[in-house]
Amino acid sequence: MSPQTIVIRAENAPVEEFEWGTLQWLVNGRCAPGALQTFGVSSIRPGRRNPLHYHPNCEEILYVVSGACEHSYDGATAPLAAGETIVIPAGVKHNLVNTGEVDVVCVISFSSPDRETVFLE
Image (spheres, rainbow, N blue to C red):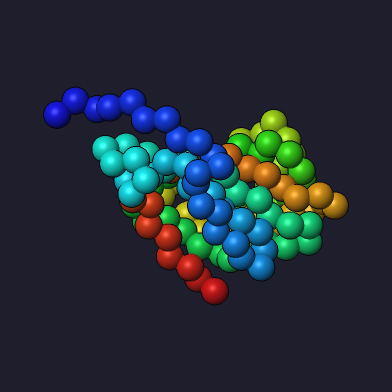
């Protein structure tokens, strides 16, 4: 079976709401059968952070579209701003803290269509 081209419109993709912000999955194995990756958009509110976690089965690439944040990874931290990218290997504990006054918006990609997440808090 050959792969097929799929067009996904953001307005048709559900948005998951959390007290810290939102996640919107545009591509993964469920919404795009046959896809080999997971791709989405995350938004974190000012002064908030997502829970510390890791992905045992995939690498994560996070690109900051807007805002300012600090990203922790295995005990270290990196300040990030619009236009910057971080690559997080599988198994690395990480999370993002919004250090600015506006939402941090990130594009996130994972090297698996069925991203696994282990929350540590």
